[in-house]
Image (cartoon, rainbow, N blue to C red):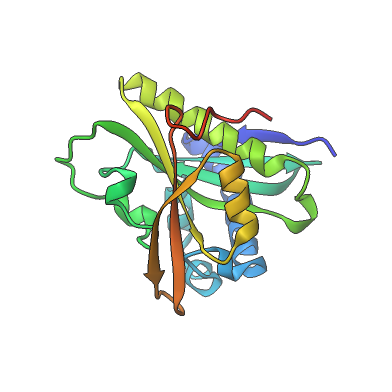
Length: 206
């Protein structure tokens, strides 16, 4: 089935247009596959409307939606540039917290974290996830170029999620960190890194 990928603008009109769909899909993601995220449904269901609005309006976060027949079937956000390199960050730390790091940090690269990635089970196997990741990576490369810095991305995933790990490796990510993660229960978290100039290759194009 055909699909389209849209980038949600951060102006007030656009945020108000999409915020309810964003909220609904995020909560559906947390309910459908609770082990795939660092957060959980109960925590985010308690968010106020202002929290959801600020997530979409945040100038350091850009969100992409994949639509089929006007239904949201996949979503990803890309946050950055972060005040740290992938090697200096951690897979278990809340990326929204990382964004508010040391303002005096001088970056040599533009490091972006991919967050909130989820595809509805009924929409998997159609190339949608690969396409939306490519869009997010292309956005990051473009933004990094504006600052004259090289682009690098990271994404966190639980170690026993082989489908997600396989997807990210297909898109050019490689594992750089493995660590314990104890938010709701004992887990092992992985941090994967993507760099267009490394041996992992170029940004995939669907």
